[in-house]
Length: 216
Image (tube, rainbow, N blue to C red):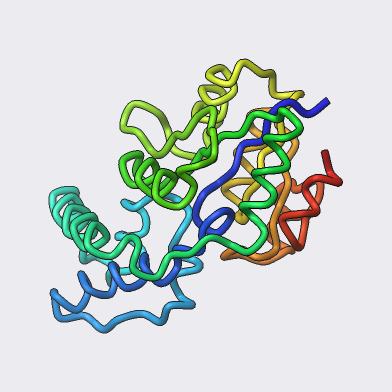
């Protein structure tokens, strides 16, 4: 029996692509580099802000830890100004969350987005939903696909891995679920493709949020 559902955030609950891309391009252009297309950011996202910054800059530009730390701070400042400019909730997500609440299913968020921004986004776009746990990337916990964050979330929700589903849009999410012993559910509306999800362990790939109720 499924007692809890853990969701990824970016590309699963929220379409954050434009704001993430606009923030990255603002930092790039401030240093004299060309902007990337918004579509290119689909493959930059998923492993946390540090990795995103590494990927958007030309090879060697942020290889020095001090340079990377500085650019990361610049990126966070840029995102601070843009995080809700164009971000929107995927169609059908509010209805899905409502049905899960009605059925007594616990819900949580586990994302590689910096914890402060993760909490802010959840409060802004899903403030009426009674989340059981919201966890972003924290310095004390390895980022996904390491299972540590998922195990922490399960413990906070009071459920076992066998009683949970992990819903996400990327290989990182599917690998996280597999590593934690949680059933992996892929979503086709996010930033990556169906093949990537299946290859990395998705038990099911759903095409609309409402289909998750049937999976339960």
